[in-house]
Every structure is written in C-alpha cells, then in structure tokens.
Image (cartoon, rainbow, N blue to C red; front, top):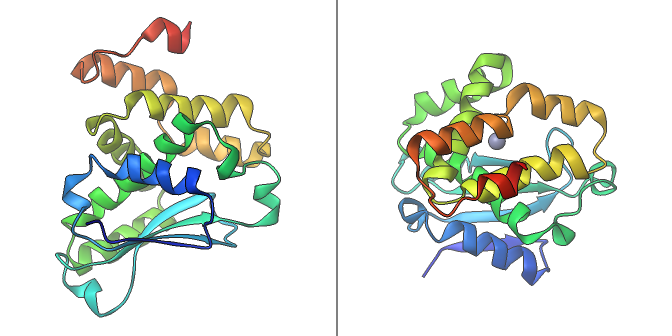
Length: 194
Ligand SMILES: [Zn+2]
C-alpha cells in the first residue's frame, strides 16, 4: 500500500484527487510522501525532500508536498473547492518535481535548491521538467486545465500571475509538446483552446 500521509487536510475530495494523481507515478510508490497544509507565503504549493536521516539515501528518501494555508492566498485559491481536473493537474505537477529529485544524490539536490532559488533560467527549466513528467504520466489535459484556471479564472493577485507567466510553460507550449509526442490521443484541442 502507498505510504502517504495527509496532515491538516480533512477534505476527502483533496485526498482523492491526490491519490488519482499519484497512482500512475509508479516510481514514487515505495517512497513515503507527506501532503501537508501549512502557512507558507512563498508559493501556493511546493514539493521538497524531507531533510532527515533518510535524505542521504535516495532510495529511502522521504518527500513532502506543502499546500499554503496562508490567509492571503486562501482568499483567492482554496484547493478544496477547485475543479477536480485542476487540482489533479496541480498535484501531478508537484509529483513531477519529485520525479526530478528521485535520481539526485545529496550534492545534486543541494545544487538544485541553490539553482532554483537564485537563477531564473534554472527555475524555468525545473518547472518545465515537472510539467513534462506530468504529461508523460497521462496528465496533459489536467495540466492545461490547471494553467487555464490559474491564469483566467482565479482572482490571484497579478504578482502571482506574472510569476506564473514568467516561470511556467504556457498553455500553448504544453499543447505543442503534446502534439509532438502525441502522447494523449484523446486530447481534444478545439475543446481546450477553441
Ligand atoms: Zn512547480
């Protein structure tokens, strides 16, 4: 059985969406993952390794996905009332980050942390990788819905939206990528971007 734990999350809608995003990520199934709501201000959601004695051994490393419960953000985005596809896409993206961490040794993990915090191009590359992992695991449609929702429907302050536009693959780029790989044949382009 999966080694998932949910902290400060009471909504079964949220836990079910997480499990649906998690299922195709077979490479993550034997890792312990904690999904936690916390008052973070730097981002709405983030995925990181847990720094404990297992951190040094990548096959046993534990990971956490933190969801912001900060009031300022929760006024604009509350994950328990998001459309299902949007939330699954969002979790699939965060799990994509963990895929990116999986084969990294300790020094590579540290370099990643420094690069992500300090270099825009590094960060753009990391966000792109997370999306690509999600697309490869069958979540192309969900990733598109997540992006559309955040950019078009949410009332997030412009500072967040411009950050998203700066660092993340645009919906058009995602479509191009899907088109190239033809990885999801059921994808109805007109329906998504008509
Ligand atoms: Zn990300």
